[in-house]
Length: 327
Image (cartoon, rainbow, N blue to C red; front, side, top):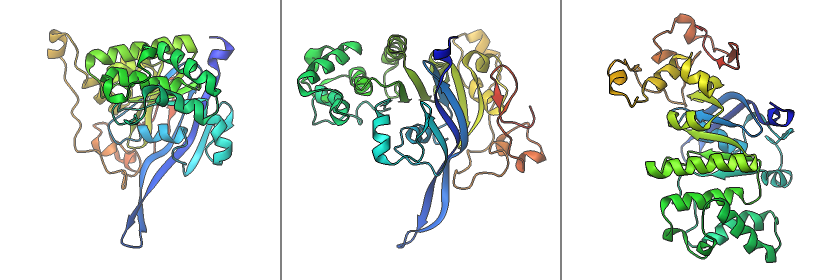
């Protein structure tokens, strides 16, 4: 691995994002939703970090904090060597050109009143990244890059299929030539046949443009295919981080093992001999998470210390980090 590729493009340190719970006419604060609770990770340039976990575990909130759509209450977000967690808007705006976002819903994330060309050109206009006479040529080039015909630039979103709309969303994310793209479940709303096309497109774009992805998903098989590293989240915390191959061959955290056991195997003989791990109880509320390890009420390995000791994310060797005092 050369020096350029091993360079860290985004580093998140002890990130916290709480949302206040208010009550009454005076909106008095009575508690917090701990959406992200002390999360740390880093992503190297030209690589993909897959962020997985159940709905509501804080994956999307992390992505929005990195984009600074949310201002975190604590922690650092270091993008290209600069901490952007507390930057004012006027200093943040130039740095946002280096980031893009692909949204989950290709239907709701596009303005139905704008033409496709205008949607893709918005980032160029906002960041003044192209002169007016260059705008159409640049948008046409982006359309070709994502597999759309430039003749479709005058159409409005409802004239596109779901896969074409997501390609348009990808074109918008690429408009200002970002180095980091937050992919917020970009294929979950698409047909299975279209999902493969979008994943292949993202991989081709990464290879051609040298992109770095934070890929947020709940489909572990997709994450295995596209990611170099995988981080598993549970109730606002990361419980395990390792390479994609290591996670699927040697999962250590009991929650990761339960997630992987739920993936169906396309072999009836192997599938018949498997014993899926069924977790007891329900996911606790992020407004009142359990003390100690958040997973201990549902964990078959839990001991008394798990309810009082918060397990640190520690390195077990070979880029494999896990938060569990039993391992």
